[in-house]
Length: 389
Image 1 (cartoon, one colour):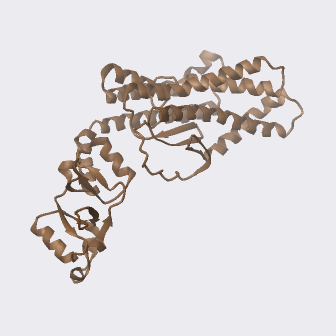
Image 2 (cartoon, one colour; image 1 turned 60 degrees about the vertical axis):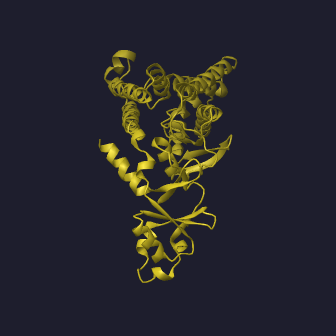
Image 3 (cartoon, one colour; image 1 turned 60 degrees about the horizontal axis):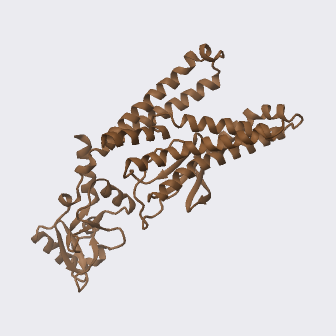
């Protein structure tokens, strides 16, 4: 199903993000959390009500149990959607990308993969494997149905085959945020060498698809001989809006990403003063002002950085207390993720900050020397400035 996120390099030290609100964890596949939204129960109920009468025709006399059978079919159908999403996730992991979760929701499923693809072929294979999996499931279900006699089980296989073949084919439509849009993006990227151009072309493909879908009710009766129902109109509106907003968001994201290379940590770094941990805060501030340094780092006796002094904590400390408080009292201990290479820039910089949120980061050279301190506020300001250009 639609996969609105693009993959990025896996990071073994990356912390698992918190579970989105309104989701339940129902298990895991190859170490990837499988989540389900509360909206799924709504669509499962609608499927049960919609297919109940058809199940009654295949197996008369079920009464209320036809709706139970309809709900069971909804579960089986979403298990096939889970296979679709799991194929995205497994291929992404095999190509060396990080996968946070698989979520089943009202419109199908979503695989949350970190960041951007590194190569066009990676984008292609991660995207195309989902629709191919759905088509394969549909083909297997169709073969199973052909070998069965009339009855409830055969009817379930026919429905499962039709649903998966439809999901597979529709997801190959070349427009974002559908998988086919990502396939188109990969092809344009590979041909032009420009990833952002691929996103823009695929985004327009998604917009055109959305407009075609919204126009369908106007020609439905002429094409298939049946006028659109209220349910048809509602579904077309929901899907058309989903495609249009998804495509528009992808295009905006692509334009923003074109400006990311201009976001470089080195020129944003503040000049740094290093002081022992036991120096009084007032003295550390005096030395920093004298040296015209915008940040202070505490170091051990051997010069190893042990903490970054928080600008907010220094500001909050009353001036009369500063001579009696060690500078280490307002320093954040150097934890994993707070030290970044001085050369970090663009997407790598944004990912590093998002993985380990903090107010300041220590920038170090390749040989371990301290270059300076990077403030998140300075990065945000530079990011906004780049976005306005």
